[in-house]
Length: 310
Ligand SMILES: NC(=O)c1ccc[n+]([C@@H]2O[C@H](COP(=O)([O-])OP(=O)(O)OC[C@H]3O[C@@H](n4cnc5c(N)ncnc54)[C@H](O)[C@@H]3O)[C@@H](O)[C@H]2O)c1
Image 1 (cartoon, rainbow, N blue to C red):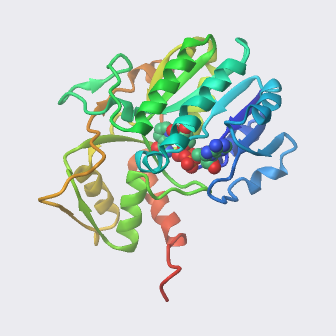
Image 2: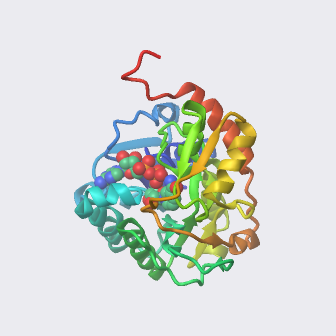
């Protein structure tokens, strides 16, 4: 297919783009390279790879790229609550207005597959699994902009929304602000973590399975379209303390303690069912253990040591 990915040079895009190219798709990435990332250099070898440096909010930039696309994957966003709170106007215009513009400019026949954070579930009911029918109650501006964008794309004819759990795993454009990545990074380099509100449950999904779920959605588009799908690991609805226990299995010198005072500004606490996605035939390949082993290797290579001799 001819695919346009906005934000395709980000954490997810830098794994998804080469995956789609290797399958023979023609991929155009529009990105403003906000993080000065060079994560798509390996993609330049493909004749079917095209790249545009620009802003996904600029209609004059987006319109000609959109005209050639059969499928649009909008990844461009200010991602995460802290980043959105730093620039609320950019969060609204990038996460919502740019998606609204795509919906306005795209023809009915063009497909859209968009990832949304499952943090939209906010604070779940104790021991009750959130399904796609559970009301969305996002807690942060990030969650609100993503949930509103999902509402819009699901109103059009040919769209799928993937409600991703917190993603983990190595990417050429690495993020160590994501929970599993962050804890493993600290376990490797500091050997310790202080946890706030360690009983809060979250769920997780490996970045290679994220790429696989996009491919699955393309392959099963007719059957899946018009709906949102939770995408996470069924056996990884874990609290932060439980996650640390799994990391400790791999790094026995790792110590974690729960802070008796203080709170986590990120209040989300929920367990999620991925049954709807499983019923379409999707099976994840990357469990937490396999991903943690990958991260330990990655963080042996990556280290923030600009102001230190070692
Ligand atoms: N990582 C996760 O855990 C997760 C979970 C659920 C949903 N998502 C969604 O997946 C998408 C990608 O997230 P990510 O983790 O790869 O984040 P990221 O920050 O690594 O990627 C965002 C990309 O968008 C680009 N970008 C930002 N503003 C832009 C603009 N105005 N014009 C063009 N490009 C712009 C950035 O340069 C970057 O390449 C986002 O829509 C996010 O909401 C991510």
